[in-house]
Length: 478
Image 1 (cartoon, rainbow, N blue to C red):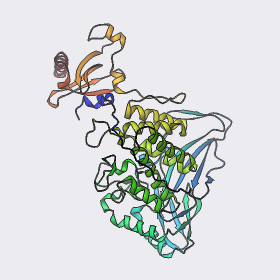
Image 2 (tube, rainbow, N blue to C red; image 1 turned 45 degrees about the horizontal axis):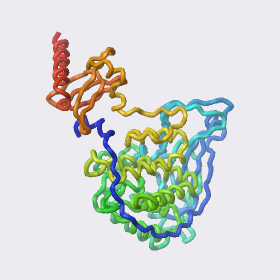
Image 3 (cartoon, rainbow, N blue to C red; image 1 turned 60 degrees about the horizontal axis):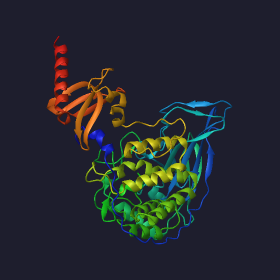
Image 4 (cartoon, rainbow, N blue to C red; image 1 turned 90 degrees about the vertical axis):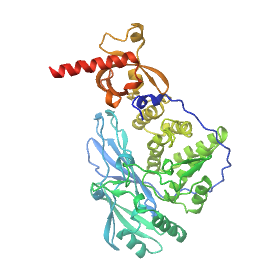
């Protein structure tokens, strides 16, 4: 991508492709049974007490369990949490599953915690007495598909009685919780075994040696194999657009490639959190496949209402999926300068989910909408700091233009260039010219550097840049 394009793509128009009408099949849904468990890890902590909510505590083999950690101001005073506060993820040493029936325990290694954990506060926040905020949302799979034949899980399958086996989960500084793991129906156990054996080793994430799993043979990103792309209205899409990071039950290359396939898969599973993960994908596909208008609105509403109905730990983590996947919907896979046919629908979905987040995450979502869609339609929470796009920073003010001069009193200059969307004017200072690389570096008024394609500049500005670079060279000689 050429340098001038790096900041001009925000101005591209977004196009919604036509959608054919589909009739959604009714799928009976029974909520996953279970209760939310609350654990106080440091009841005497002052001023910020930490607690955790977990759902559920009784699962089938292969199910995920969801957790949300909170900080609560138990003091009579206001407490400030500094900006860029990052609680960090749990290491494998902090998450251990054991059983008296099994000799060796199991340690989780989280997959790419920077995207898997919803756990960052972007600015300093003042917390009033008695206020509580969510710190992390994490999930654990029992087990992750890549560990299906790990010694602990293999022995557990061999020894598990029909009523299940109670295991002890250790976390949060030796805090414990019992979890009952039950065998799945025989057809579902066979399905998990099939998914495991059908997945090439390179498609599983691998421990990097620092207690984090990353996708193999890639730049730390999930890339479709092309064998199980999902078809929506005639277009093929990377399955990871609709499946959460780390969840491979099923994913590439085992996942259904059509909405009807996902419907049948969901209907075939017993009520469980593994089935809920399939439902999350299926409801997204219902929405993105639906014809514009009433059908689309109904499908979106079904997804939103279902998320609202979930227990808080499960809902909190599942809500992170559409936020972390926004970048997938911004551009088409074939051309990163062309909007994805699903981009408009994705924005509509984000808007519909917005009120379900707390203010800290609403601020993050507002910034994500600006970054990915140049969209400021959401109302930021009070005190939020919303980013400015580079083109907003570079754009000449009315006062700048009124001077009718390229040279401005504050030492900056109005530069002219031709970008993908036509002529562009920007305010910046010269830093360096690298003409052999067809690149010029400028500095904008907020002190950040901008890389531009030199050949995109006007002839006048090209000559100016050459003269400035010559002056720098002469100073260097002296």
